[in-house]
Amino acid sequence: MRSASDSRGMILVRRIYDLVEQVLLILGIAMGLVAIWAILHIPQARERFERNRAQEISEENRHYCEKWGRKAGTHEYTLCTIDLYEIRKNQTKRVSDDMIF
Image: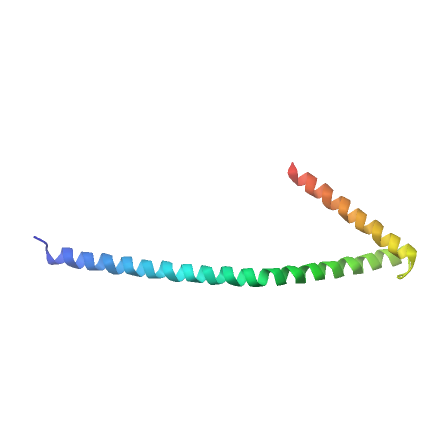
């Protein structure tokens, strides 16, 4: 025979189970919404980041090339920016290679 306390205990266990189930469902929905938001907005953020980075590099190129006497719009300026690009590319490769070890 079951006692009243066993029945109340089972009711409490069911309520806790239902509450945990609801919390997990809400968390799952929230995570799904965050994933959808990320899928929609990360590419835009990446594009913004790349535009900003390109602008920074362009300004940096202008600064150094003009500092070294290469006026913007000249052939020498273009060669200077190409050299700076190569320096950055080589440095990035070195850092990447170093990270392997």
